[in-house]
Image (cartoon, rainbow, N blue to C red; front, side):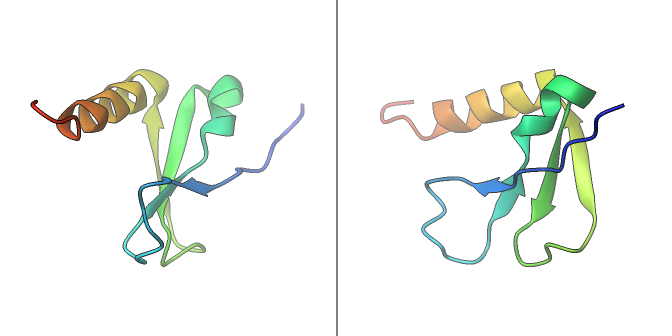
Length: 69
């Protein structure tokens, strides 16, 4: 069995302010989940969300940030 390490990334909208979450979407193919962690605590716990829940969350954030919505 092949295991892949998470490739953590921050949103391009984070502006390096420090209060960010990081996601590792590269694991969705292997596990069907997207782990999320606090960027200030990279060795702390991570929460995992199903790919559908993560997609819905991202879509909701994008909708909320669109002008006129």
